[in-house]
Image (cartoon, rainbow, N blue to C red):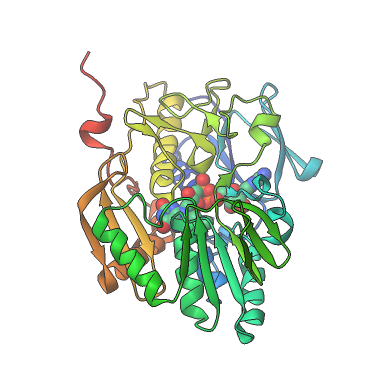
Length: 393
Ligand SMILES: Cc1cc2nc3c(=O)[nH]c(=O)nc-3n(C[C@H](O)[C@H](O)[C@H](O)COP(=O)(O)OP(=O)(O)OC[C@H]3O[C@@H](n4cnc5c(N)ncnc54)[C@H](O)[C@@H]3O)c2cc1C
């Protein structure tokens, strides 16, 4: 193994944390330094942002505490530029410059508010705890007056947020707007449960509607219909930081880093990309950004770096989905079990058992980090079986 190899990991979200801690454990007897860069010292449980928006208080997990005893250096700051040829990262516009031998890019994604006029200026998002706290405060204000909330985006994040807000504020009139039917990717029974839950919570669902504009006090649909909205929450689509593209690292049309079968940048192999910021393809199709798929990319990449440092070959990354877990407020949920390609199986779970299941999923990353300091814990539930097996030579 090369002497004093420096691995810099950008982003201490779900995937960056796991990659850093697992790598530290696996290289504890080797001459490897690890630096983890993240803007905040508090670990963001993004899976729970809708809970903050509904006024709940989350556990305060501090990144330095989670890293305690690992030997990882934590740099609190924002990576503002990468020089992939000189192998450096600039933090906070020059406050620090980090040299690296290997870079792990784990910057995640945020709500895509740039695609519709007015969304950036007038819509709330769940992109960070600060955004979610601002939304919670505004919801408190308008709930007292029985105000109106429009959630734009009928994907699973939109559904979870809608249910959580409607449950926490029964006085609000909540509308969920989106192109697709909520739960469109689920089987009929799971989808029906999801719809019953939204109905029970008094949510109005408008599907097949594209939002054309967000105004200070309304949402305008392409049909010209105006939905008066004291609050607009934007969950329709995600966007990734432009750091990789700005640095000349090969990205796809969405700005995600193009990776090979071992999750290394196709243009700069000393850069590994994981989580939402990586464009990962399996035999069955494209992985879409979830924690479920992100954690395995992090585990895999930590192991791949160890193997590369030892001069060993690295097998291609393999992953298959197992479930779509969706909270419907605090006491209900629906879990659609899936095939590797995320299409629904027959099995699903609903009600309190599903809420317990969902909570176990959302609560699992932090215990995995703690255990990973001492042992190689698997965060990969399923590699995809036949769906991702390489064809025999
Ligand atoms: C409300 C909500 C509910 C969700 N529910 C589920 C679910 O039930 N199941 C599921 O599988 N997925 C769910 N997701 C998706 C899941 O949260 C993401 O797929 C996951 O967080 C991706 O992990 P990541 O490490 O790639 O990115 P993140 O967890 O977003 O972490 C990225 C980190 O990088 C940091 N960062 C960003 N820019 C910079 C920079 N320039 N320099 C340094 N650091 C930077 C960020 O601050 C952050 O800490 C949900 C998302 C939301 C918003």
